[in-house]
Length: 234
Image 1: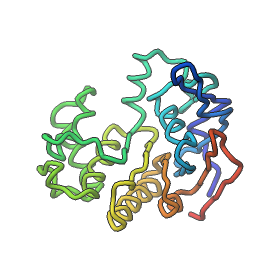
Image 2 (image 1 turned 90 degrees about the vertical axis):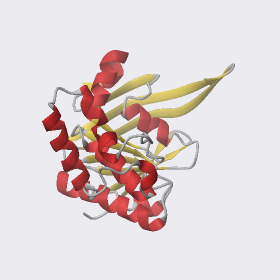
Image 3 (image 1 turned 60 degrees about the horizontal axis):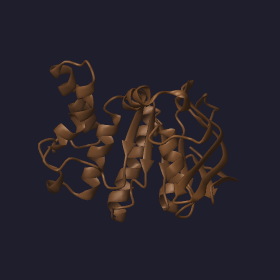
Image 4 (image 1 turned 45 degrees about the horizontal axis):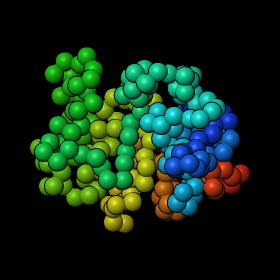
């Protein structure tokens, strides 16, 4: 695979949390570059810091020190208000437990992020229908989450993540709550989005089968990014 421009540039990032009188280090001097259009998996045991790193990249959490630049923007220097605006326009989130609103239909769940945009109602409709067709749920738009399988709910969540055409997709254990067949369907979809739409995907996973779908695998051990790096042919 040709070398792509760096879209996420992480330099000397440290992060710790306070637990009463104690300071617990979570990430130690993390340096990582992620290419535009890359599909990278972050692996490591529980407590290794991989979800914390994902949250820092997505602008959900703040670094203690260091810098994270996404498409040239140093998100560590943004105010809370500017960071929220940046996050809404540049990051698509895929969670383990879908985070769908139970009383809303698939269509309405996917449409939610567009209410923060200046699109007309007609344009929003076109965007939502297109996103749901991309994830092969064009015939399930009127269904509520409880009427969908786990795999279908995750595909709705992926459509919602795609709806604003974000610069990066971040996925935290996206197959962790799915059976093997549903997990395979979701991973196939993510791989297709990466290959065909050139989406940059950063995925945290415990599952080696899921990680193997990524182009690059990086490991975290006790807050340190190891040199272990697996490049899969694409």
